[in-house]
Structures are given as structure tokens and as C-alpha cells.
Amino acid sequence: MNINVELWGAHTGNSLRAAIALEEAGVAYSVRRVDLRGGEQRTPEFLALNPAAQVPVLIETSDQARLILPQSNAIMFYAAARSNGDLLPEAGSTAYFAVLERFFYFLTDVIGFSATGFFLKSREIPGGDVLYDHVIDRATQAERFLAASDYMAGDKFSIADIAAFTIIWAFRERMDLPNVPQLHEWYQRVLARPAVQRGLHAFSRRSVDQ
Image 1 (cartoon, one colour):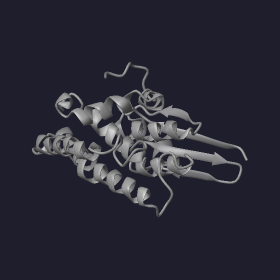
Image 2 (image 1 turned 90 degrees about the vertical axis):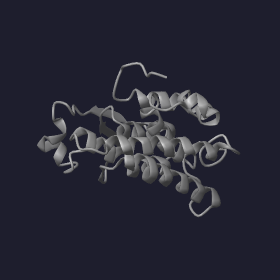
Image 3 (image 1 turned 180 degrees about the vertical axis):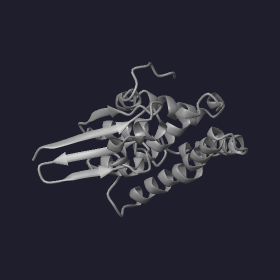
């Protein structure tokens, strides 16, 4: 069966998270860059894929069906399902729930506050900086997850690490990473992964600032 996977996105945290997951899972895909500044996300073509006018969107087309996923976290689980257990352990196992707990920690306690902060700041509504301070505090607290393991949910890289990495990468200039040594070492270790580098460059040819 012929399967074609296309990832529509831009140089945003959500798009990069999806691209890194696909790269780590070894999923062959093509990139469709969406010009956000030019308003391409509001064209009829894009709105037919995601009425919320947000990136990323994954489209899988096969001989039998067409799958459209307009949520970055759904795309991450799509990638995990195709990673032969490399990004998410067997469902129901202790390791599986450990990964989910850390994954949702970063989604709800860190990334969610970042998104709300960005929304407030983009509309010049007070409160954005307070939320950004919360993001930095909760991301820094993730140092404790690395006390006994190399990765966020154990000794194996997972979707929890991708979620953690992309938000810390976005806030790296605001965080004092060298003063949280285990988190800093983890960050450098993840940054050096070839699949992570490919994902970071998926929507931009600019060099990535370490």
C-alpha cells in the first residue's frame, strides 16, 4: 500500500514538536511550509484542513483513505505509534504511564501556560510576563525528573523529552540553564540528536542557535 505523509507547518513550537517526533520515529514525510505572516493559514485551502487556522497539520494519504490530524500532540502520538516502541512504551506498562505523566506535565503545566502568555502578549493584554515566569519556573523544576535517569521519563528517549525540549528550546535565552546542571546536560544531549536537528530545521534553513 502506498502511503504519503505531508506535514504543513511553520517555524513554531507546535510544528517543530511534530517534525521532531516524525524524524525520531523514522516516518518519511514531506514539508509544506505555511506562510503565517502572509496569512496562508487563513486561505480556503488551509481552513479546509483546520478551521482553527493553526499549524501544524499532518495529512496521510493512502490508496484506501485520507487521514488529517490538525493537532501537534495527536501528530506526536501518530509518530509514536509508528516508532516500534521507541517513543512510547507498550500501552499499559509502568513505563508507558511514566511517559504519559511526564508528557502531560509539560503540556499542561508548561506549554499550556506559554500558549496563553503568547496570546496575551500578542494582544497587549497584561499578564503575559507572569505566565512566562511560570513557564520558566515549571520547566526549571523538571531538573528533578533527571535525578536518577538520563531522560524525562526514564532511561529511554520518549515523547516526554520532545515536549520538554521544544518548550525549553523556545525559552532557552530566558532560562539560566548552566545553573541547573542536569537539565542543561539533558538539553545538550537532546539537542545533539540528529533527528532533533532535522526536526528543528524542517521549516527553516537558518542555523539553530544552541
